[in-house]
Image (cartoon, rainbow, N blue to C red; front, side, top):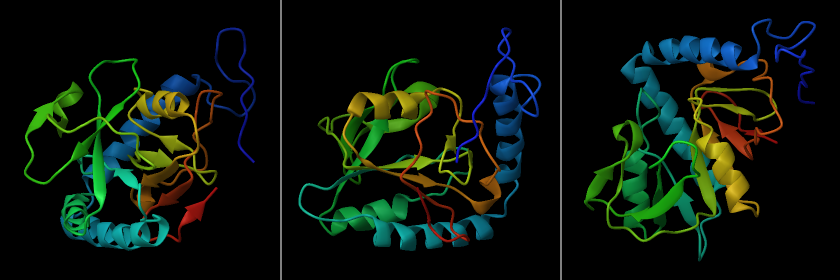
Length: 207
């Protein structure tokens, strides 16, 4: 069961909820978790990423029409680029998200190894020439996550807006390290849970 919040008129939650309000609590928790992630040894991050890749091969139903949206790693996120290249070599279709404007849903463009890249918000690379596509599976990097598969991201709200705009039921896989696990993100009405979460050292969490 998710944790509901009943805010006071000033927007701060009541009872045993974050006294400063969810947005400020999330900002502090995000900074804490990013500091932990950035301090993880490279060897450990690589080992967790290997186990994430194994989980992806189990979860993703590769079939005709499958398009997987991945991500270009930033800030010590699990680096799945070798897996993406190998998947493309096996004939699988890969896309990357495109973030061009704050407050707008993501677009997705098909990606090919060696293809020309442009840079969007926060200088994140995306395919400059790939066609726009609608993914059937989306990999969402996690800053934090809770037992109900709710995701704490970077605070821009891109994935929540994107999932709302896409409609349907894409497979959404949260990807991160086990150190990102927290008891709750205090989900709000706009928050969209992931279908499942892969955190390497833990069993696959499914909603």
